[in-house]
Image 1 (cartoon, helix red, strand yellow):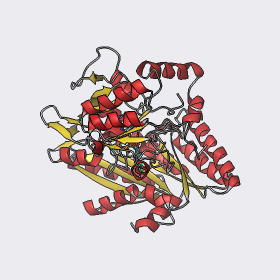
Image 2 (tube, helix red, strand yellow):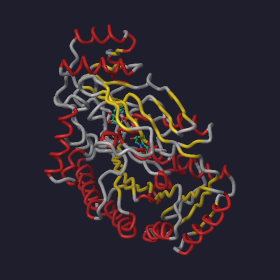
Image 3 (cartoon, protein in one colour):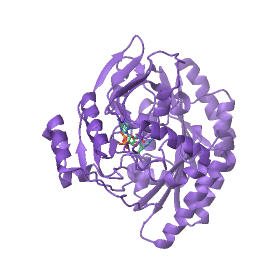
Image 4 (tube, helix red, strand yellow):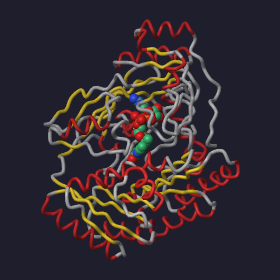
Length: 467
Ligand SMILES: Cc1cc2nc3c(=O)[nH]c(=O)nc-3n(C[C@H](O)[C@H](O)[C@H](O)COP(=O)(O)OP(=O)(O)OC[C@H]3O[C@@H](n4cnc5c(N)ncnc54)[C@H](O)[C@@H]3O)c2cc1C
């Protein structure tokens, strides 16, 4: 399951390479081994070689690529920064991989309507910085925000710490230009807050993992930048109190702008990685940020601290912006820090309805213990999204068999509580086999039918999402 082989590969014929080079220019079509290798992997560390990599600069060039490839039966894989955790950007069937690194322009920031129009290769952090200079705010903040792209975020419907209050990428996409299999561009959505004309194709395309079409332009909603924020660090010695604390915070009418957790192994991994001053002996750590008007903030942060203490935590409020930034830097270091705990990271991102967290979190931890595996849990606990990571050598057959069973139990647990096998990382290839756990055959048939409308020859990012 975890060491997937490239399916039957389609090599791009020399004649087509020549056409692509003629249409786009030699420098935008890469076919030597070293170049292709650089585009052969994502954050899963699985490698699948594309036959050719193309690097378009304009929407028209994307249209030409799709047109040429589709007519010749060549698979097309879109790729942003390759930071995905489920293999979505891997060229499972070889063919042509489209990289969006040259389509990285912020086309417009319209302050009056609070919208931004961008090309898909814009790095999320770059957009955030650009809009913040104008007093605006683009909330979705995957921990990979310094290198992932808006196109990849839309395709995965990415989340992040702030999404507990502000919602995921889906809530911010107003319009999309998408190149479909005919090479035509469809424009969906409106730059208005209301629009109920026709089916909502924009929402269908968001989170479609590049399997329906290729995004070439994205219009995003922006909101006013919050005036200030405060962060609380709460240290727990008992995991079952954590879920209750999360519930109590929301019950008190507080909507935190981030509510993250890390377990003991995660805390220690981060401390080994960057010495952030986190308590190594804590069972669980919650980082809670509240933002808004400074006056309301004082009250709310006190209330958050009180609720944590009532549930048995030791609490510290960060006194300065630097102190708060250091805590969030520790949080963002988690993925690379945890990666050092094993040669292979089996990274799942299940989600539970928040109300079940008090029961679900201890049960989740027990799965690691039952199979005697190094299991590290952390994530966006405020929206019930837990990153459950199994750190393994990848070399021991017995360990592999145990981790396969453990992953299945993790998914079963999420589904049993009414949750999902993925909150934000998507299905890609690594979770494709588990789609049947989530959906009935009729529901899968509807998804396959939609895929067929958009991609009758199954050439647009084929082999993904179990379709
Ligand atoms: C350290 C680390 C932390 C992370 N933290 C988070 C997190 O907090 N939240 C979260 O949601 N994710 C997180 N991720 C996962 C990942 O960063 C996100 O899924 C991100 O949205 C992927 O963006 P990308 O540009 O790297 O896309 P890629 O990985 O290149 O591609 C992802 C998918 O998008 C498709 N795609 C890319 N561009 C286009 C396009 N123009 N048109 C159509 N389809 C396209 C690809 O085909 C693929 O299916 C993390 C990853 C890492 C390595």
